[in-house]
Image 1: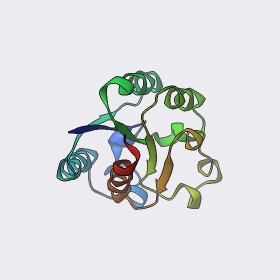
Image 2: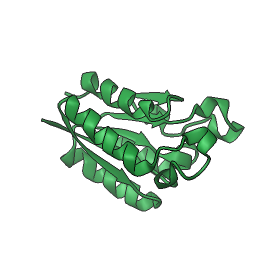
Image 3: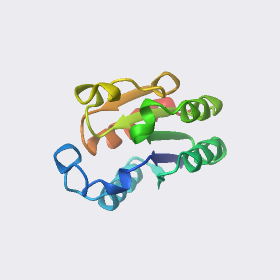
Length: 144
């Protein structure tokens, strides 16, 4: 069975609490369980990992090359300025798909640019929690 990582960045543990008009009212824990269930229905074993600390995310990306076949990443605000995350993703050989619950291109100007997009295989944004399911589906054809 293929193993996938769903990596969540800063403040994504607050989904369902913060900015409900943007992220909805469903909790992060509920969405994580739905992600694991969706992955299992599609013959994947999924680990959902969230951290508010950039270094922890980088360590997890480094480890992903040995533990997983592919990854979905919602780096939160780090998407827009973390060259360290970008370099970590570039250093590993497994495919990464960037996802965002909100449409980052329809929000504040600073959110329009992703520094990790060039090292990810693709980007999915604006479909709420469905963005994670679409990202997992995209991995099916990307994993060797």
